Length: 144
Image (cartoon, rainbow, N blue to C red):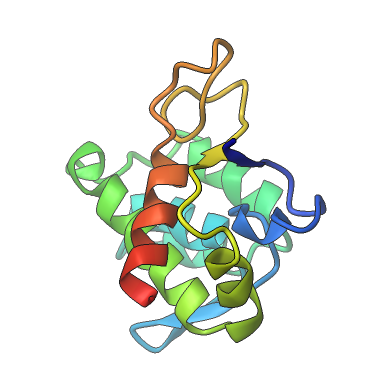
């Protein structure tokens, strides 16, 4: 039976959410959440990147990242999966407590039960790509 997660406050797997408040450092830069990092990378090198980095919460970071007043980087579609992988790897590498939760899933399938997202989650019909779940499983295997 797959392990489902969605909201950061839902235990025990809320730490799998990109909104979970587990900060991490990449390239010497601190990030409050994966959502902050992921959204900011759409604007790497632009002032919008820093604006998202210091956003007060992950929902604000997401809103800022989805605004198109500043164009996103031209290679975003090609790099977004790698950006997510790097963030997930660093988050779980830097927090032993949530790494233990990830390891506790054994070899089970991990699914982001996001009905509104067929790319990162399983979508409205549970037939989505579940890219975030796949990324978590990949990181789980690498960190073992």
